[in-house]
Length: 134
Image (cartoon, rainbow, N blue to C red; front, side):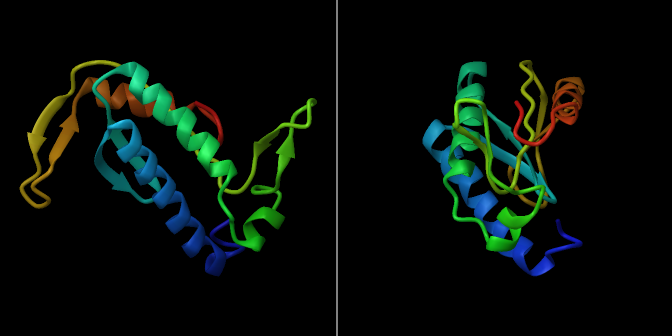
């Protein structure tokens, strides 16, 4: 969508980031870092991570997306057989993995950064999801 609607994607990404961070505060997670539009976050329990994923997916359905986004095939409203809205606007793929990462403070940001096999596995789990899937 960036190539087709660059002027609409700037506010759309801002809305996306607001949803992600608002739900992170409400659920009690930690924003490790972002890379582009991807968030790496951590939680004290796998259950809270899953709750965050569900809360974000639900909140994304309630966002007033720019009209160019929802008029696009990639952002249009989609309903299931029971007429329940299941997709609208930007679709976020998510993956969860549980384990003990390697943690070190980042000398530039002074925030805790996470590394190691657990982080790599979480990224691989997320990469197999489609937008809107956990």
